[in-house]
Length: 390
Ligand SMILES: Cc1ncc(COP(=O)(O)O)c(C=O)c1O
Image (cartoon, rainbow, N blue to C red; front, side):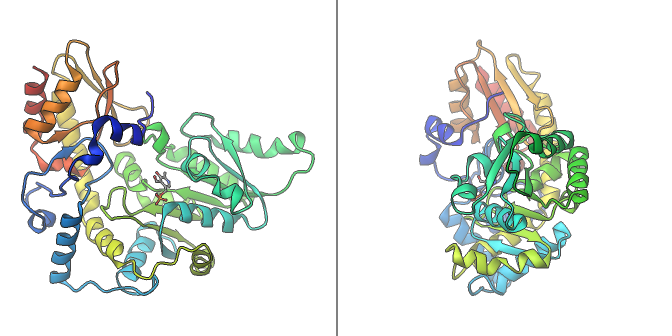
C-alpha cells in the first residue's frame, strides 16, 4: 500500500483550511470531557491523536492551571518540564530524560553523541533520520548514514551483522561503526512495526559488539498500544529513546530524549550550541503531562472500538477495511467503484462530523485510529458510513 503523503493529503482535502479537530473525549467519566468546549467534536480518521486549535489549547491550559497552578521552567530547567522529564524517565525505565525542542534534534544529538568520533550510522532506508532530517547527520554532525532494508519497514539482526562485517571486504579504509538507529513504528511504511523479537536480536548483537543503539520512538506509544509490548520493554533494548510530544499528546511541539545520565547530562550544552535552548517550554510540557494521563487506557478503548466499528463497516457492501501486516493504528480502506468515494468523504464530514482521508483514483485510502474515535458511539459511526455510501 502506498504511503500517505501528509502534504499531498492536506492539499487534496483542504484540511489546512479546516478548523482544527476538537479534542473532547466522549468517554463517560473521562476528565478531558469536562474541560473542553462542548461543541460537536469531529471523529478524525487521520493523524495519530487529537489536535488542539489555539482557543482549545488555551482553554485546556487555563483549566489545568485552575486545578493546580502550572509551574514554569527557565531554559528547560524546573517546573512542568522537570515533572515531564521525571515521568518519561519512569515510563521508559531510563536513568534520565530531557525535554528537546524537536524530535529531529533529539535524534541527531543522540546519534552523534552515541557515535563519538566514529562516523558510520546504520539506519532504515525508510526512516525519518535517513529521509526527513535534511541530511543533518552528514552536514552538521559529520556522520555517514548507511541505509538498510531498502523500501522496507525494518532490517533484521542478520542483515545488520552482514552489513557491518561485510564492510571489511567492501571498503578499503574502514572507519569505525558509530551507532545503529531504529525507527519504530515507521511513519513511511504506514506505521508498521519492527517485531520485538527482531529488536531483541539486534540489541543483543549491538551489545555484544559495543555498538550503541538509538530508538526513534516518535510514536512508540502507538507501537505499545497495538503490540502489547510496554514502552519500558521497548526502551530496555536501546541506549537512547526519543518520544514525540505532539504526535498524540496534543502539544504544539516538543520531544523528550531518554537514556543514561552520562548521555543525557551532555544534552543541555549540545542543545544550546545548536541554538535549541528555548526560554520557556512549560506550555508544551504541561499539556503533554495532562494528555499522557490515562492515555494508555484511552488507546485500549480506542482499539476495542475500532475493531467493533471496522467489523460493522466491513458488512457494508463496497467497503473493505483491513489491518496492515505488522501495522499499528493505520488500516487499509478500500472503496469499490460502485460507491462515489468523494461524496462519501464529503457527506461523512458535513452530515456526521467524521473526517476521512480522500481516496485515490482507485478508491484506496487509509483509516487512522486515534482517540477521537471515542467521541462517538461505534453504532453512530457505522450508521454514518451506511447512510453516506447511499
Ligand atoms: C518518526 C519521526 N521521527 C522524528 C520526527 C521529527 O520530529 P520533529 O518534527 O519534532 O522534529 C518525526 C516527525 O514527523 C517523525 O515522524
